[in-house]
View 1 (cartoon, helix red, strand yellow):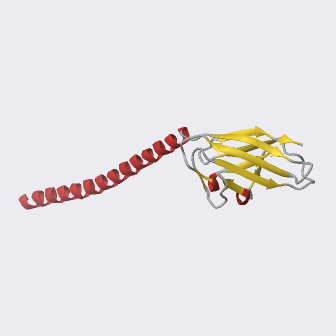
View 2 (tube, one colour):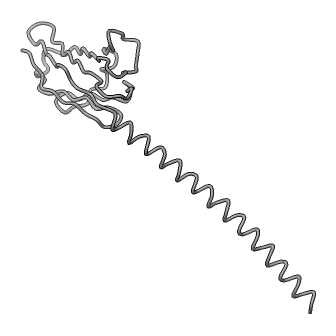
View 3 (tube, helix red, strand yellow):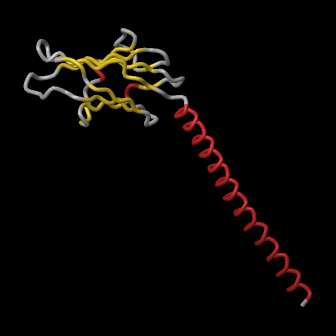
Amino acid sequence: MGFSVSGATALILVAFLVSFGAFYTATTGTFNQIQDAEADQTDRNIDTINTDIEIGSAVYNGSGNYDLVITANNTGATTLELNDTDLLIDGELVTDWRASASINGSSSSSLWVPQYTLEIQIGRDSNDPRPGRVKLVTEYAIAATASVEGS
């Protein structure tokens, strides 16, 4: 009887150690993932706070070339990616505007650095109604809206 009690106790102890090791490993991994997610969320919150844009002008020339020219400034401290920025004209998403965009006169850059000016020139069809409002939305959900001026 002495051996069976000692053997069972040893077996239970080994099983407990293996179970605790598995539990500890899983728990540690989960806590690390939670800490990484919280750090990412904090970084996104800081970027959101530091992001600001302003539409300087939105001008439509309805009597000549039917172009809509929008100038906007990155007045925040966050560098923005044009591929993550959206343009809406009268509430409709415009998908092909990036090809006609330039940042500080350069059409080859897709990074909208703080204090730089984004200019978008969109050719519109003469049959399209005159646009009334434009809206730019950044990757951090910061938006700027302006009324369209011109004839």
